[in-house]
Image (cartoon, rainbow, N blue to C red):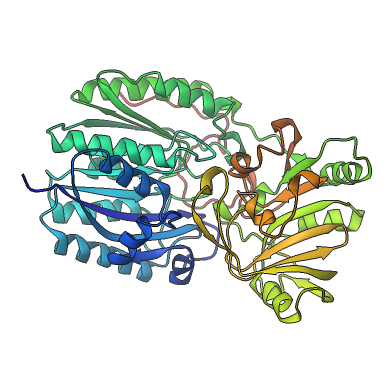
Length: 506
């Protein structure tokens, strides 16, 4: 028998509706390649491609021989809506590659699910529609989604199976790829699954979506309890709260092996359970003044536990610029000692530090080129403690084993604070951001991370949950949704409309 030919492609972007447009340059910095370059990357011990794709390859390699057909991988992390012209370039490259690869026996897509484009509210559906229009109705299309995906009915209709992550932080990406490989094998053998989809008028704030404990953890566990001989997959996507799109809102997608009716029944049951629990999705934040006092106290008294302060409102993993100075300025002014801050995105400052060299003392001008309203300039005397080219490998959590590129990177000492300054915007979710400079996190009294939640899987060896402080400061990724200038979300929607009622569709 001829080997089954399976195409691999990826389009991953989480679009904050109020962040600057995502450009081709951003994708190229993080990972935009296709064909042979994608195949070469997947063969590396520390690839740049998403773990869902390497997991799928691993899962397929566990069965009989198959032919991998790499098409294109476009990874943009989190930013604003993708530039429409560039998005159309991605789609054209995808379409050209799929056409040239025909005939195909299946297609695997590594998607995020919360992208928007400057001219397209549902680019993930556009990607799926493009592939479906070429391969036809009978070729399996299976994809992975981030659990922050803003899923549409069109996405579900165009794919055979969409499997979202079950963990937040996302430490099960590889497992979801392996799962999709098993489903692909079953579909090559004749399985034709049926899916049901329910959308809820509910936007859970980002900091309420952890899957270790809390309301989202409970509903994920409830959904997984429905898996049986008939229910193949349950994907509960909290949605990306800052997407500002008609697709905003939590969604339930249930895939059954044979029965569309059974899939619908389970999806509706999960949706009702989730809606009844909506009042639990309330952020609990700490005021900057209180956080500052805690950091000062920790620096003065080594008997107190060290603390991690999460700058959740400036999370590059949610479209933040990674450079607001609210916490930095407050801690510096208060004289906090023993503080590490990572990772501050400022290419101009990093370049200046490299030009001056290790040991130089100079006036550091943070955000000299930034125009975002939340990224105010901050100036302080600084010493260049160390320099790095920014190429490393993730050690723990969501980026473990992945090649990381921070661009030119500098470690600056600003008073009692050591700041890691990078040139390629991304969140601080792995201790390696500090450790690549030889810093011992266990000796720090306070650590500030620009991340919403993925840091929890990287820094949990240093900080217990009770020593993690989510600081309430302004920023593009604030979890206080009443501050978000929404324009396009469907209304009414909870919690923006707290007194609304909702009846699940029949």
